[in-house]
Length: 316
Image (tube, rainbow, N blue to C red; front, side, top):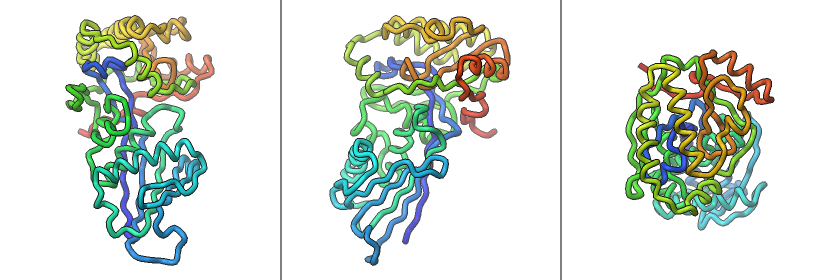
């Protein structure tokens, strides 16, 4: 029996949502919460009923929330607790097998256990960290596996294996990743809040792409904001850049700003992160984290992280 372990970070897109698909520079951060995966390869015949199968189990907080069995040859689904999720997983496994057909040579059975460090509803990258882990297991390019199975920009794949914040740009369908310095001196004035609403990022992105705009002017400004936001030295400058970003994207996608829509009395700036209308938001103000957290608690939102609790920063 051969056992190996893999781990990938979660992600948050700080700037550049939607327009990253058009080539805008985006600022993204890997999160301290991620997804682990253990793989047991059996290369000899045994008496267990899982011979010739891939047995998959997904865990969160030690609870198994998804199970599926696949035939190793062809990855046909034998059984699952959630058929739709099994079909999605099958698609990724089949593509990984196509990219490296020899990886399962001599393998009699596989047992894979994935373990999420965050709730799947939060939108912190359960799919991208899964894809990155499977790519590592199958020894294939994670970007190629992503682009062959998904319709996003793959910034989340960049975060999955990053040691800290990155600038990400999609150029002619290729990932361009650059290390970013983003560890504000005023981070005690920043909070990340789960909005309480899960957003289907794939559908949200499909809706945006259907608009077929080039957004050259907006793309340039958003790219500048991404750079300036990472380099901001004061909370006032940081907040002004957030507000400008929200203003531009509100017009681009035709949706109200989240602050105007839900938190108009907040004494600071609020920005949607990733797909608008759900998942996480960023709040920045001249009040400290404890006061920011207290404000959102009054709104019934209690999943609130400080910068240091959520963002992965390289060790000095």
